Length: 131
Image (cartoon, rainbow, N blue to C red; front, side, top):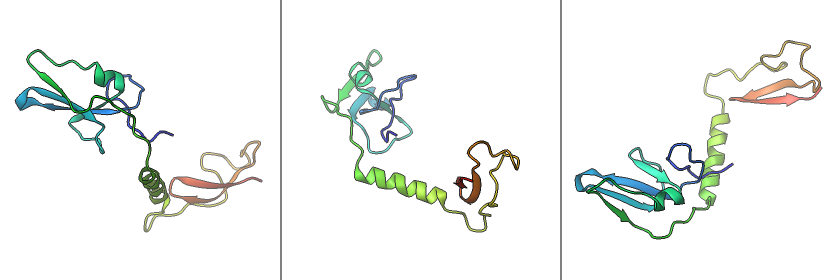
C-alpha cells in the first residue's frame, strides 16, 4: 500500500512529487516541492506533468525547485496510519459490538468449505474462527 498522493491529472496513475498553485491576481502558476498536506486549491503533479506544465498566454510559471524527488514514507506517516486503523476499529460508546456465532449475510449451515464462524466484531472488522 502506498502512502503517497497521486497526480491530480485525470487518469494519471503516478505518484505526485510537486504541487501546483495558481496566483490569479498575478497571473502566475507556481510549481514547487510536494506540499505537506493536500490543499483544496492546489494540484499535486507527477514529475512528467510538473516539468511539462504550460501556462495560458500572458501567465508566468515560477518553478521553486528544479529537481523533484518522490518523498519516502516517514515513520510519522506509518504511525498515523496505524493510529487511524486502530481508532476506526474501536467500538463507539453505546454501539452494539455484534452478535457472535455467525457470519452476516451467510445462512446458518452455508458457511462454505472453510467453516468460518464469526466469534466477535470490532467496528467493521470481524473475528472468524475455523470450524
